[in-house]
Image 1 (cartoon, rainbow, N blue to C red):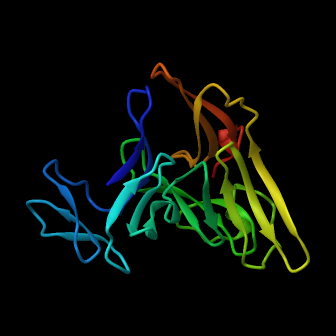
Image 2 (cartoon, rainbow, N blue to C red; image 1 turned 135 degrees about the vertical axis):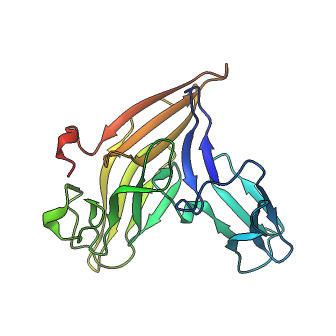
Length: 231
């Protein structure tokens, strides 16, 4: 079960996947939002596999134009996909300290791949190969922001394309900019996404959606200009 960014490219771009390491589901599968507040996946081979078990019964679910899938009880938010990113964050999304991103195995396979991007408890955002210890010697990219340990740190991508770390400490607060778009958004609908790509590089992309229905994609920033630096 995935959320796709619909573009004019040959294939839509996956921005979020539920239970990404599960086997692919058959074409006869369907979803049910039960009265008990569970999101169920039904197939001929399974009987109502639980994708998510909500804390309260959900009265509605909505896929917002931001790309956020939200379950509501009345006007109260019970669960949202923005809280559980896979390899991508979208404009308006905030990721808390301690979160780990896994690259996808391939463009067609959204299961966990060969690299991890860890928002470490010391405030540093660091990339590693999988199946190694998170010791500095094994990292191949970082923001160099260790030492901010108040617990309120956040990774943020704004709707205007500002990708930054919101760092806090007992002394002061600080914003560490990772990437910043200078794009003029006045004439077009724009969507920004930051993706930890299958090759282990962290990149910021801009998608323009014109009133004619055409769309374009631009790469605005890469963590590693030289891909050979990926371990």
